[in-house]
Length: 384
Image 1: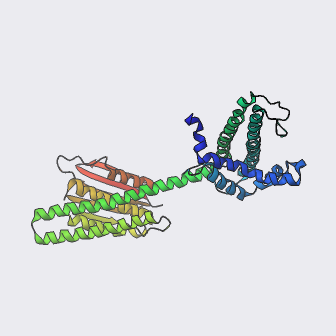
Image 2: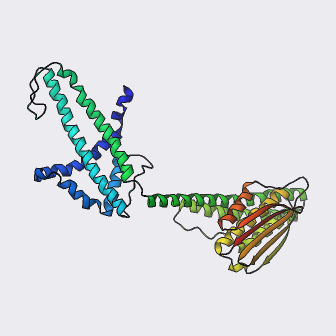
């Protein structure tokens, strides 16, 4: 029984009832003007529904009264963009008017019927209402009095659910709007993935360099080497903090453009950081690096950063060969280092996966793995 009466305790039941009553305000006013042509308001709704802005107002009402508090009610609040949306709005207005008329009739006459049946059950004559005129007072009618109230309960709850379903169907996003929402959601996911890669590359590189240099300084026992290591740790930490602040700024203010990310023009900082960590870096740059487009140069910097980070993290202070070449409309990046004995090299880590994802995002490709006793990372990124 408690479950049966639960809808009566929900505020949504009554906001939906209010939504069904609203169209009857116009209808009631018109009935005072010309009751013989009661169908005129329904006819006027046809040109009204063709106005693009009407869909916005109906969507706002439906969200507030039919689905209050729902995060994703699946009801659009955008103007009609095409004739299909306009016709759906017209159909919605007509349907809302019809359901409102049914609800208003039931809300008035079903309680009246319950009162009349109660009067007849108590031996009193009907009060003179058009219906149920002619009933004779009988005690048995008192047993029928709850039935109109149960019917009213079913009408209020049932038509509330019906009008909500119709709103989702007729005022819901069109195919174009759903596609636009999907594209927006995809862009958000891509942006989150990019930010995650940014944090992984920048912070991971800084922490790796700091750990390797701290360990090397402790093992060396040379004050001059220790000073150089601390300077490198400080510089790398400051760069990581700058990257972190930039990324957090993007998260805090999505509309504000992000500050310039590092490009391959800043690669010397990465190479010097690796050298101060003990690695012997042999770097070779060829081709017009300044002509590399910004997005390609930025992603190339991150690929190089992740490759050097993996060298320091997994192989330690080993000789590293770095080749950066721009030729034939392609940016080629290659990082090679010898594999220490007993280490097969990382093949499934998130860093290597990030390198491959970055290359694929630009329409290029990246290969990582052992090659003639070395561990090789090679990425080819198209420039256009």
